[in-house]
Length: 100
Image (cartoon, rainbow, N blue to C red; front, top):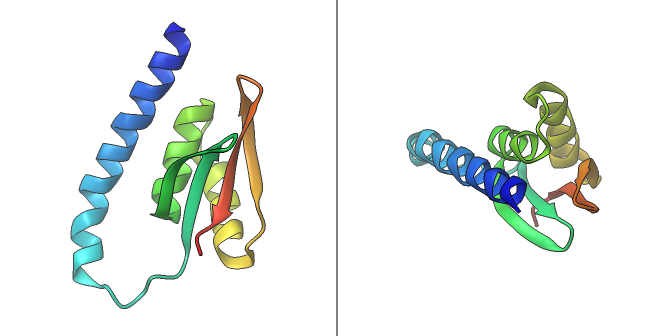
């Protein structure tokens, strides 16, 4: 139970940090909206319509791995539409899907 709380706390902190950093950049240029990704754990969506970098950071934090390889998967998902599984946690797959 403590591990789930730590994972949720890390996810929440990463999402807040990402939103705080991404908001000014998004406000500067609203013309490009492609490349958005969703992050899900099992059938629960934890992040929708996120920038590739933010989605990679959140998925890496949930999985406890470095962000580099996850960023490659997120970029692949955004450009090809291929669903990618980052890891499994608690028997549930952490997946990246292209935002519609």
